[in-house]
Length: 86
Image 1 (tube, one colour):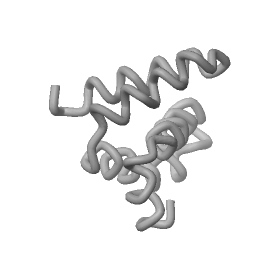
Image 2 (tube, one colour):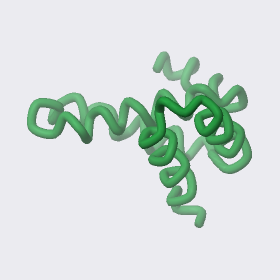
Image 3 (cartoon, one colour):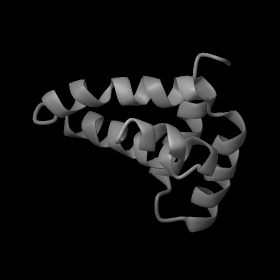
């Protein structure tokens, strides 16, 4: 699943169970193993659209922000977000 489906599934589980710290930590560990720079770029690329459509689709905007937040918690990916000032 190099199309990002695995990463998106982990991010969705983290969002669905955002109050479960053990699951969040496991998700971050999993993302550290499977997420790539392309996944970061894909979600950052959705940010402008999410902001522009936030009034009409607040859940979609929240999902994009949550995905970026989740990916940015992975130490190996953090530099990508810092370089893009995200």
